[in-house]
Length: 229
Image 1 (spheres, rainbow, N blue to C red):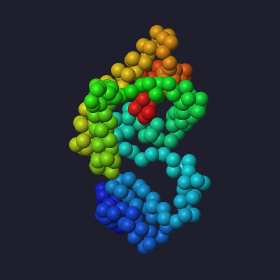
Image 2: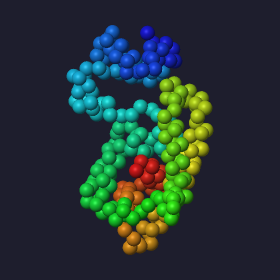
Image 3: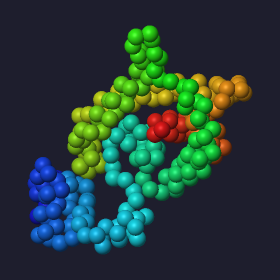
Image 4: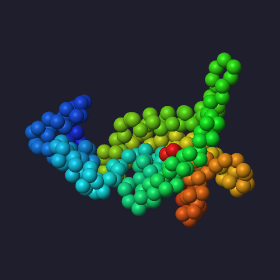
């Protein structure tokens, strides 16, 4: 039986897979739970797994609410966090037809071989300041993603009680400033018509610009795509 606010969380132990197995043994191969206020379905038979992941995959393709997607990935604009729908389909098409084709990846070979985040001295490797900044940002984002966030398990109107939101905003401000600096450098290079070979970021900018997005929305889409590289 579920309880107010916590749902069925009291039925789960530290080893979730064993808890799910015990519930499936008792109630059958399909079990509905509420993790806090989040509905969840536990599937434990090959036939039902095939039904969910192959036959009915589009109905289960969206993502659950993750607070990092809202505060650190531009309100779910990143392809890894955006809900399944038209925007996700456009981003997937962009990746499949413009960014990750064999021909496009081969065109980056020269850059991949020459562009380095590490500058080697005579006796030791010294990380560039740009790479050092990026390393710390990624580390902080990853650390936040691995933590428990109460806002993901409570009703929407209660999400603001999450005490970790101020820290997420601080990380996002650093992240946004860093990505904007990279974007500005690439935009300036493209506008100058330099003969320098184009890299992944240049290709992405040209592809997104051709879609007709404008203003801040366009800028946010650029930064969210850059972060998902």
